[in-house]
Amino acid sequence: QVQLVESGGGSVQAGGSLRLSCATSAYTYSSNCMGWFRQAPGKEREGVAAIYTRGGRAYYADSVKGRFTISQDNAKNTVYLQMNSLRPEDSAMYYCAANPSWDCGRWLLSSQARYWGQGTQVTVSS
Image 1 (cartoon, rainbow, N blue to C red):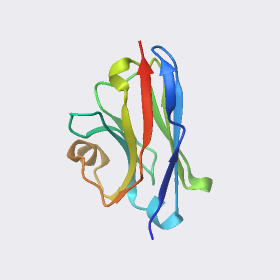
Image 2: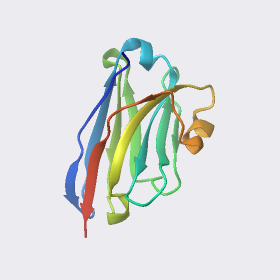
Image 3: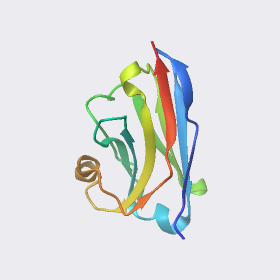
């Protein structure tokens, strides 16, 4: 059974920071693309950031560029999302995902994935 285990969500004031973690198996980690998507109530799911796990190239949604950083730890089969300068509009359920894609940037726009985590809530208050 594929598992993507997220952690690190919580509540923070605007301007604050949070770091999300997503740990998985070596098999799932080898899926090429891992990333983070988010969905706020009443809104469609959107891609936030993705990383090509075999090379480390990162991709970001325009709304988070310069504020969020995705990174990886190959030894732990874990992907992180460092979120700085958080805004109330960043509030959402954040999902870790993995997909056997070769174009992680295009995958980020698709909001579709073979493997999903359960999600972790991020709430940013003004």
